[in-house]
Image 1 (tube, helix red, strand yellow):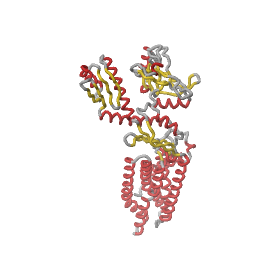
Image 2: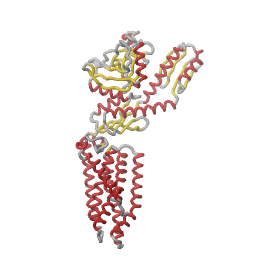
Image 3: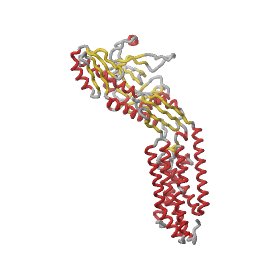
Image 4: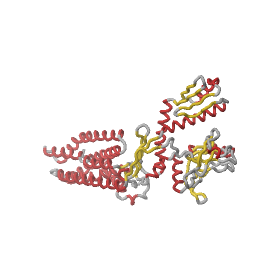
Length: 524
């Protein structure tokens, strides 16, 4: 236990030096900010409770997803019946059911086979009188809702990432809720607006076969929708309406990029399609020259320009009465994708940076008091060996900060508690070793023999004690969430570094002193 080859001394020295270097940016971030990514330039990320931010608990309106699926089924059935020259009355969505009645009940079997072949996830009920009721199977409904939740979480994550924040917490709670914690975001209203916007972009042809005034009176042709413009009058009413075909020419799913830019001094959003979207967009504009193409965002017509010539490049711009901030937010939404369902807020909290600073100051004070208390105890109890332990404890804290910075972990108030706990636990191994050395010395062993026996005898106890604590920390991380995981991370890192400092660094100090001084008695 007292043999330290040169390579081992060099390795310990390199690890300690790297620990100090990678911990240094946390104390002087401005000095290291311009260094390369591989250099010690990263700092520990502060959590919501330390730097302030937004806490939102949202509920996904999953019924909207089911309703949209049923409406899509309705449109599909309408097209199939028209193609098969089958007349039906009352085709529409009623609650969780698509219903219609055949004008000629003798066509019941033909339509029944057609509908069943159309979608295998539908439960079809057909009476002898030709009345049809179509509902989704329980398995299809459950899968659709679960997919909507998972997709919503992913879209929310993308949108939050576009804000440039670090280490947000985004996770599912219960059946249909999403918890979002975003540190460092001061404008919570803007965050809510960006998160809750559905941002469904699509391109449709404008139907000019019927005047808009006639459509406003409720007489809209089948397969069309009357949509308001995005521009508003002073009264808040839409500036106008468009009769838009329901068939989507190209949807936002085919977008590959969207950026806020300027055209003729006005802020606009430039977009580009993937190869499939570019082909569909090019075909539609080639076949409908002189027609109006409506750009629809969340059931509002942003603009409806005339197609003067085919647009084959797969890119374009969205113009409108936008401010610069609105074009930036719209570009964020389009890049992140569309939410499958609206979100409603169940709980909203914000933590100010002042409260976070109070938590940092309290945690710093607790760490200093804990460190000073441990240092005084070790120095008073074990003299020179205790002083060596204090030096190793400083290196231990540097290693903890270095690892947390390197892995870009988020430090929360419970995480600070984990570090403070580690300060006390870090000397446990040294206490066991020094007490064992003291016992061996009292039995008449020489200093070198007592130190060797002390380290050998205490090693298994140290490993067992720290291993059990490490297992508990790993379980906390695996099954916990939020602040509990932050505590588990700092505790786990602290256990590993404290074992390294106790078994390697402190032992190196003690062995080097023994070989240099050759004392007749141990100062312990």
